[in-house]
Amino acid sequence: MKKLLFILLLPLVLLTQSAAVRLDQSEEAGARIKAIYIYNFTKYIEWPAEYKEGNFVIGVYGTSIPLLNELNKMAASKTVGSQKMEIKNLTSAAEAAQCHIVYILADNSSQLADVVGKIKGKSTLIVTDKAGMAKLGAGINFSVVENKQKIELNRANIEKYKLKVASTLVEMAVQVK
Amino acid sequence: MIIKMLNLKRTVCLAMLLLTVALAEAQQSKVSAAYAFFQQDQLDSAKACIDAAVKHPETSADAQAWYLRGFIYKSIYNKQERGNKLSPSRLEALTSFKKSTTLDTAQANVQECIKNVKYLATTLYNDAAASLDSIDYKIAIGNFEKFKEYYLMVDPTPANIQQKDIAFSLAIAALYTQIFETDKKGKAEFLKMAKDAYNRILAIDPNNIGANYNMGVLYYNQAVNLINQSDYDLDIVALNDIQDNSINLFKESLPFMEKAYELDPKRRETLLGLSGIYFSLNEFEKSNMYKQKLEELEKQR
Image 1: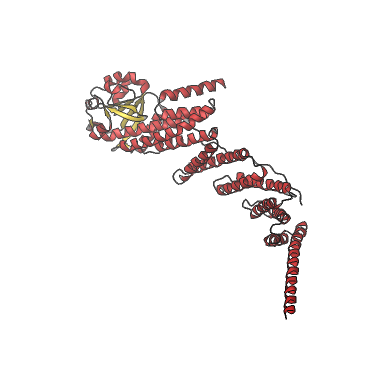
Image 2: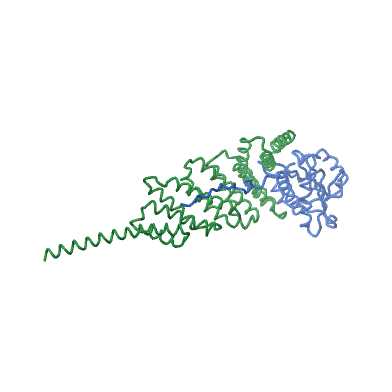
């Protein structure tokens, strides 16, 4: 019979790894959840008439690039009523007075008292990200319950700035007094 | 009258015997003819003769006939169907060599048959490897299954074929993942197919680091995508549902990633994966712990 040709098993050249985990994907996802919450706050909380003109300003006090990116993406595609959203990265408590919402990130929680001091007579919703803050002046505080991002709400800390909060939002939050 | 009838009966029997011998010789001559045609490279004629011979009861159990048939079909494959990943002649050749070994009680050509099976099975494997793309992946699977069936004749050691099975399943699972990533909604079934492939590997080898890590990544990415595809308009109730589903997926991801970590604690990707999963579960202390381990590891490099 004829001669046999010899050939070798080729290696399976295809990559055998799925796309790797990117840590920033987790941060992006966490930021997305917070952005969705914040957009919900604009729907369930009513600002006084004089705050319904110009841009709707959301100030972020602290540094989180994923969060700022998410909020900017949200601002580019959504409005609050007829108002455009504007995202500001605050560097001082004084700038909080120009905002409809000021979100104090966990690392800047010690600045809460300063912010409270600067927004007297204004209609600014204070949002924080550290346990206990809703008792210390924040209107809404992000908290984690069973791995899930939830919110604590202190109605008095919202309404004292002439903001009206819908009962729907109150019911969906853990209430703090 | 009786004598006449006996004579007639004897004549008929003799005629039948002669016919049988003649037919048997005719079949043997068909095998010989097939061989002659094969030697002259007249493969179509060789094929017609040998196919007739192996269908006939006289030669259907002839190991030599099947052996020759294997060579004829192998030559047809090599000369006419080499680029055809679905070559029917290759399969006919393999079937013939296999059949020959089962009939070859004298073991005259068994080793030669096995060598040829090895050669042809290898071409099946190589064609399977070359078909690992979004268009031909079904051909890849079909050829790999055939490869396994015949390669057992060459190397009957279960562990060796299992290793090849694992390597192929890892490759096909990665391909399914790539296809899914191109169109997550339209090709959602590929995510399940990828998970099924990894599960098959883990059923064979629970300590396979690649399958554990990749399975962890699949669940992790599914969870992240679920959140990142949510619209900002989502109400809080719906957001809670999304969070519940994503948390379940992160928790599904965790044991696979932890197993991958246990198998290789110094693998950068796994540390990154665990840090990401715990971050997403809002367990920041654990997330930071793995992040620190990763930083320490990178300092050492």
